[in-house]
Amino acid sequence: MTDAAVLSDPDLPLDPFLPDDPEADSADDAEAPEADAHDDASDDAAPDEADDEPTNGFAPLGLDERVLATLVEQGFHTPTPIQTETIPLLLAGRDVLGLAQTGTGKTAAFALPLLSRIDPAVRAPQALILTPTRELAIQVAEAIESFSAGLSHVHVVQLYGGAPYGPQLSALRRGAQIVVGTPGRVADHLEKGTLDLTDVGYFVLDEADEMLQMGFLDEVEHIFGLLPADRQVALFSATMPAAIREVSRKHLNAPEEVSIKGKTTTVANTRQRYVVLPERLKADALARVLQVEDFDAALVFVRTRQNTTDVTDALNRRGFAAVAISGDLSQAQREKTIADLRSGKIDVLVATDVAARGLDVERISLVVNHDLPTDPESYVHRIGRTGRAGRSGDAISFVTRGQIRLLRAIENTTRQKAEEMSVPGTDEVNDRRRARFAERITAALEGTDDGGDPLAVFRKVVDDYVAEHDVDPLALAAALAKMVQGGKPLLVEDLPAPPPRGEKRPRDDKPGRGQGKRPAAPSWTVGSGTDTYRIEVGHNQRVKPGAIVGAIANEAGLDSAHIGHIDIRPDHTLVELPADVPGPVVKRLQRARVAGRPMGLRRASEAPSSGPRPDKRGRDRGGRPERRERAPR
Image (tube, rainbow, N blue to C red; front, side, top):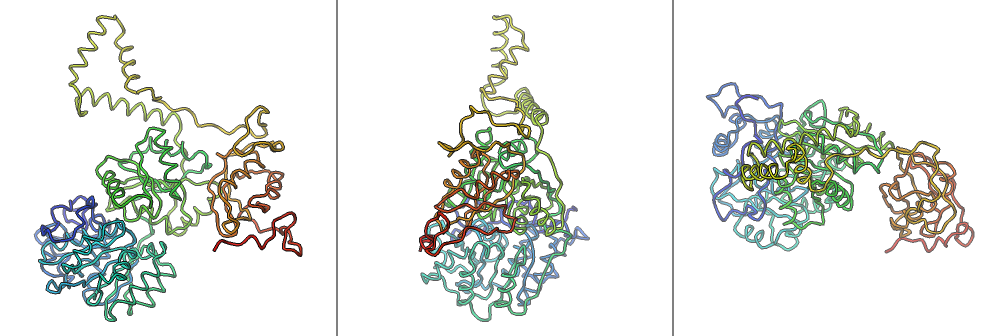
């Protein structure tokens, strides 16, 4: 990179560019996350040709001179490709459909022309920007505020759930011209009559695919219906599914399509790897990966809110300071957690896809897919959390053997192969742990660690102890090291290996969860692979995960640790089990009953077999009358 700064430069702080006007609604209660635009950058941006003309890159685009001056002051001289293509179109009044992933500079692509056309004299909303999450709303709003530093009397209001209505209402009454919000809270203000879209001439949908995936289509359609007919629309999306095409067809006026061409749809400077392992070893594997990999901060993706708690607890038990973030947290808790991650108080964050939307934290250099996403689009969004703004990043996915096909589908979509890796070995982990312990000793010797008495105080204590007890100084040093470790093991042990095939369970083994009094469990040994199985009961039968676990553990002789993710759907359930379940055990599980019905277990990839036929009274063979098996209203 030359000395020409690309918009946005990730190392440039936001705070110096925030407006000084105390009347500006800048969400003072937020923890000031960096703006998405200040993280959005592209390696493809061209450097300036001359140092004495720092505005050459943006000057030909037609932006307002005051906006240009602000960009120069903030050190931005060269637009990214999406900014070069989009800004002139929006300034000309054209609708734009942009295919742009996170990290390309799209926030500035729509914010700069918006600011060039805002009329400060009109004290009413003139621009509305929708984002899928409150975190992204905060970041986009702060980016716009920083770019508007040279414009007088232009104010931004943030409308998102989890925050009090009072400050939002005050900012709207003061005449904020730019509204940035989430669909739900914007719809609430519209319903209450506290937000008027009469003067809105500029409407932006940012990360529209994620917005629709989160179920906001109805709110988006409602907002479109309230906008003036002559409004201008800019829609940005990392992917372009059919639903986005349909929204564009219905609501955009002959849009110009802008797509940032690339060899892959994921960030090119993100190294992508995967490891094949059974579900039961994920906790140990995650701990080993985090101990061996070099990273500043790590973001671990899981499938459900319960998984965030389970994985975080497992990491904390292994000595990591991990924190979970999910939809259960209040807005204040979420913002504090993100601020702690940004400041370095937290190094490992465990999150679901929805909870992690809008997390643009420079420190995140490692993404771990503890649970592989079920669609390539979610994978693209996850990977976009690292390798941003020209920095290198790493992404590691945990894949069960039953998910290999899904991984290949993701690779086909992203057009980028992931490297297979192994779980870090015991020797590698222990070498790293020894090295880090040695680094702590070095820091203490050099006096670079903070706090406590000076080293000379402890040196005198040691000298006195050696003189008094006549002990070997090396033995004393080892004793002190053990004391510092606090009773926790410094070295890890080998991961448990599966017993050899054919080895039977000892007769005196205690029964697993849910076994109780039952016929003897089949004799079989659990292998290392997993697969997804289907059982023919679901929400309509009011089945609970505990009932499924108990039935499978009871009939298959499995410990609950070998029963993986359970996905209950309306008329069936998908459950992750060992890939090598023997035929006799499968037949036993097909006949086993849960929620009053035979499970009918089979591999999810297999065609259904003919099940029990109901008799004339609506009963299956030995089952409950089918008329009782109806979904709750």
